[in-house]
Image (cartoon, rainbow, N blue to C red; front, side, top):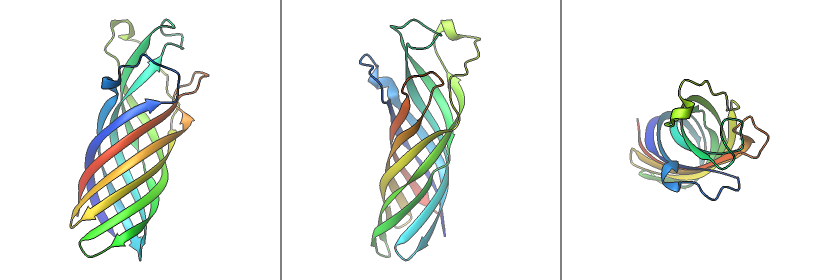
Length: 175
């Protein structure tokens, strides 16, 4: 069994028809811990991720006008559950392919616009479930992962398509 910690960046997106998103505001950061169990070339990994990501919200709610696109900053906790195969398993280098699921619980929402100050927003459906696919490499006690999370459930309560998709690149240390 291996324990580890990771930090990294993410890029958020949604399946929607918005064309006027400010893409520079869709980057976020994250950190977390995990433990991995390996048997021959198969492995299972469970983790706890603390995620800060941006969410472009289209003007389709009753909160603002239809032409608005508002960028929210959200803090969330993800619990990735993954299984995979080690393509290369040498004493110092391990190359992994994996897949799994990650329920994501939104905990805090930040908006920098004056019209939302002191207003309780209950926009999110908790948990948001994503399917994750990824690859990773371990070199000695360093690890690096590239993951793509594909939203399976919608993020917002409104009746429009809002599955979240995001790319995560993390680096970390195995203990």
